[in-house]
Length: 461
Image (tube, rainbow, N blue to C red; front, top):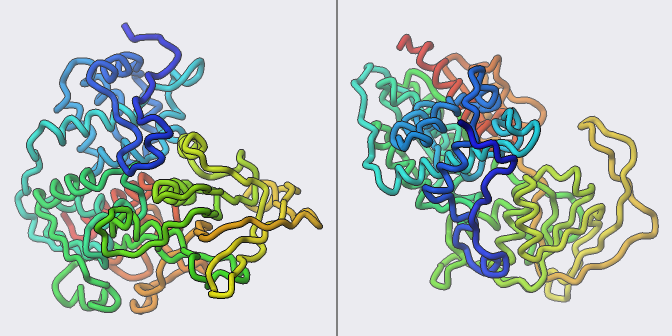
């Protein structure tokens, strides 16, 4: 009989004051006893509503049922059949708005902790299990994947499982994309990402890092070298700025640069060769998950005061509730309904503060959210020595401007014809943030999975 407890089991985690000053993982994960108790809350519904909320369509009741029966490797098999990155998804996917939002247990209580159980199963496999992936028999077809982020890794994994010769090209020196440069160590340990990469290599995927497609090699040249089809999963790594005075001052970062220095280049370590300003008073502009990550990193770098400056109310913040609550617990101050007007300079062109104006919510805009409007005469100055702009990103134009016939929209996103990811170029598919603009890891994975299926059909596999 299912456990009808209305609440999911709490996730063990570091105490807030301790974790705010280290980069160790915040959530400690379920142990075996807690995981089995949480799995027992699943009703094992016949119609599986939770699966419809999963972009990669994991058979969620099946993997949870296997946990109940102590069949952890079987549970991992269910996960890995649909997801190339289960240990990652268990940590960073917004389950509360996807699979858990469809859970029947959530009608009269809290949904089953699907993400927490996914993490537990994947971690147990990575901790105790051997690499189970084996290189499949070759189907004698060759495909290229551009970008080693979530969509590219998923696409490469599914192509390799079908026996394709797959090469992944990435501009950075480490595979993983946003998983290694964007998401902090305390949310997603890089060792976890590396183990997932090793699994893909065991399937036969080849990684060509330090390769900038559009500079080092073009898509047309990839076809000339024998690749039959190409997937573009280059993400949306081009930062946006507000266009206000002072954004070129010393001490102003885009969130991309700030997080890349911290996460990929390990600037938080004492022996790191990568410079980063260890500011005392920091403002992070924005209200998404990236803003929360940047603010929490700034706190861990030793800041005495960290502000989130966001022009709308907390209810309209796009960040996950869990990330907002964690940031608050760690002492970050939220200045909602505030908007920067200017970043202020000292005589040496360093940041000394920010002029901010208070906002009120007016009528809904095109997004359905109430439009923020300035309150006249409400300006004030914040004393700061660093600012991080986390107001969104867009796709880098390099590939679309070096690939004749590749159509993009006014936002710089590659245009696809349907859910398969087929672009205006024959044999070229695309997915993830390069198509949608900045979104979630799991949606990018879903796009990579759909594209791989279409690419196999295109090659006649």
